[in-house]
Image (cartoon, rainbow, N blue to C red; front, side, top):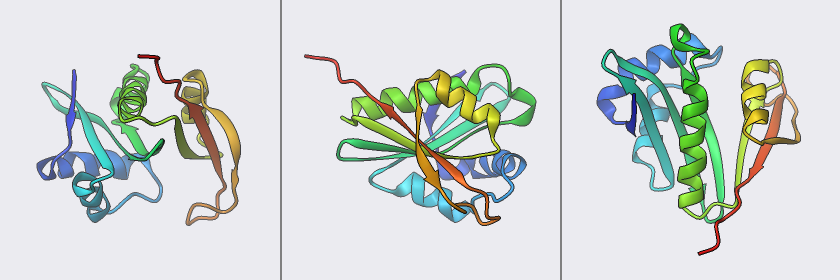
Length: 148
């Protein structure tokens, strides 16, 4: 397994995972913005068979924002989501972020559990955040910077 930068050629596999993972999937154009954006970072996790998962996130000054993380349904429960999350945390920390924020559906208990195990805490609720009217839980992780 390796994590590398996402590129346009990855979009068919990324979109297949996205559409199988989310009730309101992103459009390919949204991923293009993340691939090309100066503050954005998009990465894929792959093995010899292809892309197993992906993540997109942004860093602005001292703040990181996890936009998206997903693993192919047949590969869930193997620790790949946690590996992608660790990659996001380490990259944000390396870019000087002090905080890492994310929104997660109130109903997405497996994702919320993964985030809590990584040290995220609930910061608030974004009422009717998703198109279908479901609330999002706003979570934050404080990224301690190592003294140099």
